[in-house]
Image (cartoon, rainbow, N blue to C red; front, side):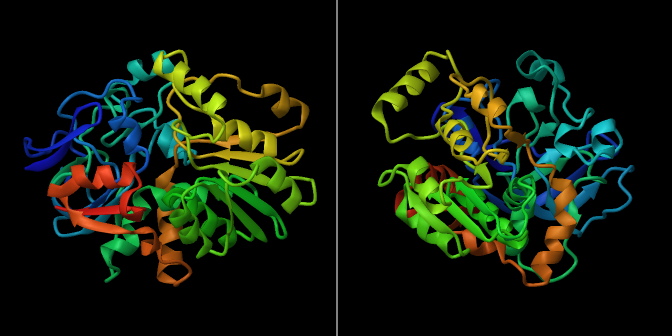
Amino acid sequence: MKANVWAGRNRLEIEDVPDPRILNARDAIVRVTSTAICGSDLHLVDGYIPTVKKGDVLGHEFMGEVVEVGPGVRNLRAGDRVVVPFPIACGACFACEAELYSLCENSNPNAGMAEKLMGHSPAGIFGYSHMLGGFPGGQAEYARVPFADVGPIKIEDDLPDEKVLFLSDIFPTGFMGAEMCDIKPGQTIAIWGAGPVGQFAAASAFLLGADRVIVIDRFPYRLRRVQRTGAEVLNYEEVNVLDALRDMTGGRGPDACIDAVGMEAHHPTPAMYAYDRTKQAARLETERPYVLREAIMACRNGGVVSVIGVYGGFVDKFPMGTVMNRSLTIRTGQCHVQRYMEPLLDRIRAGEIDPSFVISHRMPLSEAPRGFELFKNKQDECNKVVLTP
C-alpha cells in the first residue's frame, strides 16, 4: 500500500509499504477514507521526538471502513464506518477503568523506552515514534487498529467524514483543554495558539460557559479564523501580552490559561528566542517553553493553567515559584479521546458545532509531503490539511 513515511529530519516520502494484517485477536484492519496532518506531527518531522526511524508511517488522525476484524472483536464488522482515536487503549487496566485512556498500561510494547525519559510510560500512539509503541500511523491506505473493540467509534448515519474526522484527536483535545479549566459562568479564558487545537479550545470554552475567550497568536489568518468562534484576539508581535491581558481583565488576569502551542513555541523577543533555541539545538533542553512561562505569569492568582500543547522532555527556567506562591493549578495530558468521542459526536449531531470549520486544504495522500510544507511554513493560509488515500 501507499503511505507517508518519515525519511529523515524534514524529509517525508510516499512509499510502498507492506499491507497491515491481523496480529492479535482484538485487531481490526481499516481502509482509510480520510486522514489529517496534525501540528504535533511537525515535532516528528523537525526531529524533536526521539526514536523515530526511517520508514515509519506517520499520522494519528484518521477514519475509514473496517475491512477485517480479529476473532476477539465482536462490536465491529466489515463494512462499519469508524473514527479511530489516536491513543491506543486496552479498556481493562487501572488507567482505562479510570477513563485515563492515553495512560493505558497495556498498549505500549516499548514502555521501557518511555520510562527512561518519563519515569512511567503513557499509552501507545499511532504513528508517533517507537518510544510510544512504533505503531504505523494512518497517513496510509490501510491501518491496523489494536484493541479495536475499545477505541473506534461507529458512525452510523450520513455525517460526512469532515464533520467527524477530528473526533480522532483535535476536537477532543481542545475540549479537554477547556474542560480542565473548570469554567464557570462569567469567566475569562486565555488561549495561546490559534491553530486548529486552539480554535477547538476556544469553541469548547464557549460551549462550557465561558463569558470571554482571548486567543494569542501572530498569524492574522489564524486569528481571523478563531474570531469566528466569538473569541477576542491578540497578536503578540504587536502588543505585550501580559500587559494586554491585565488591561482586558481589570488587572486580575484570566481565570484560566490554555497552552495550545507546546514545544516549538516562537517568541518575539530575540534574546529569549535565541536562549531557548540555542539550548534546544545543543540538546540541553528539549522544548522552547515561552508560551508555558507566559501562561503561568498571566494567569490570575488561584487560577488554572491547562497544557494541551505537546511537550516531549525537559524545559529550562520553569517559574515554579510563581506556581507555588500564587496557588496556581496546572492540569495537562495527552487527550483521553475515548472518553469524549460519544458526547462530542452528540454535539455534532445536535448542530452545536461543525468541526469542519478548521479545514483549509484538501489533497490526495500522494501530496502529503507538499501538505506538510504548506502546514509547517504557514503558506497559502494553511490551517488544517485533510488527505484522502
